[in-house]
Length: 316
Image 1 (cartoon, rainbow, N blue to C red):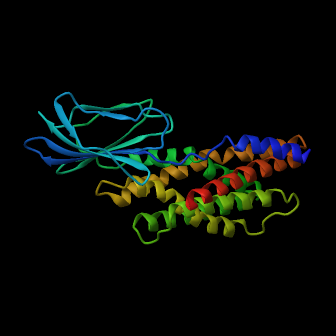
Image 2: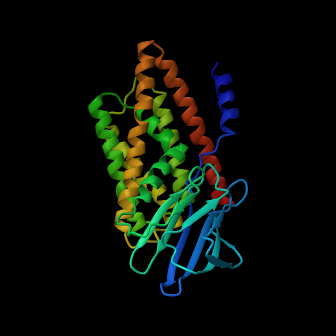
Image 3: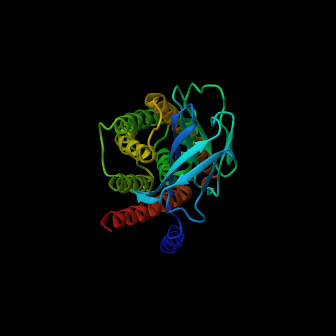
């Protein structure tokens, strides 16, 4: 029976990829507020499937683009923009975004910055006349980062299968939150840096480790918060990698980082009840061991597949 289950899981995970959080980013810098000239940089993840997203500027603007080039995971396009009037009060659209790709729009005027998030459902934004005070778009980016990162979700699920008791759950989640907040901040401020491929491969290993712990039916981790803190430091570097790829193009780095981290925590809080309900329900119907076995094999199989895939990516 176990061999059949392993085979089914292998077939399944061979078709599953952990989606990397690689949002697009449009940065527009005001060059001259009197003549309404702007420099724009359009960054789009080149590995995305389907048609490449396209920026639609206001009708009163004329754009001239340089030949795009590849830098890291992104296709970079430099654009000169000349408008008949200020971008304030006008609409800007980004079409052909994929369901897995959001686009952060940053417009640096001479005296302030406007930021907003564009996605498949909301492809157009109106650039307000009034000044924007807080970079709240990074909160949405934080939420999407966790929801789009299947590896981070499986880690949280696996962690909750390894602990019991309300107090232990609070301690463990708090330790994980503090740890990834520390390395997220250190990484964004360039105090700590590791190669992204290495970080992603090690994150996959943390998932495999948790899967092995889940399989130990009668053995609970005595100090799960210590393990969660250690692994959280690593996951914080993973959270920071996508943010560093697109960069923070405004002058509010601390607030942008804060909102991004809050977004991650909100998504995490929303996800935590799911495995807890599954665990509670399985115990009520006396199928907890079967559920733990499925969780162990499923999470472990995915983690191992991602580890091999990411190591190959580093080598090649």
